[in-house]
Length: 144
Image (cartoon, rainbow, N blue to C red; front, side):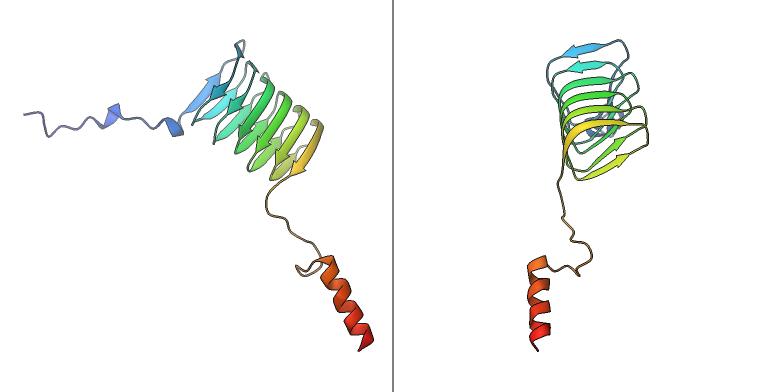
């Protein structure tokens, strides 16, 4: 009698849900999640997610953050490892070590960090050739 009724509302996709650490909350320890994060409170520890992390104006992370993307309006201190883009808003304060593929910084942001840009390396102004190849071609052109 009830076999034809499907309960689709019971199934939820945790990968699309956003986790929120509210203002006034303090978490000490490591956090691992498949979902995105919005942080308005304080985290002392490590955060790991394949998604996006937003640190709001009142948000603070002291530790290691590993994710794909991050938008920072608050404070971050520690090691930041992103596979894609770090976006620093004008109110952001970042110190420590940073590894990113892309970096966007608004005027007014504080960025006191060692930064390594990872990802596709593009050589500019030499037609995609290495400098050694260019020098060799110049020498060959001059001797001809």
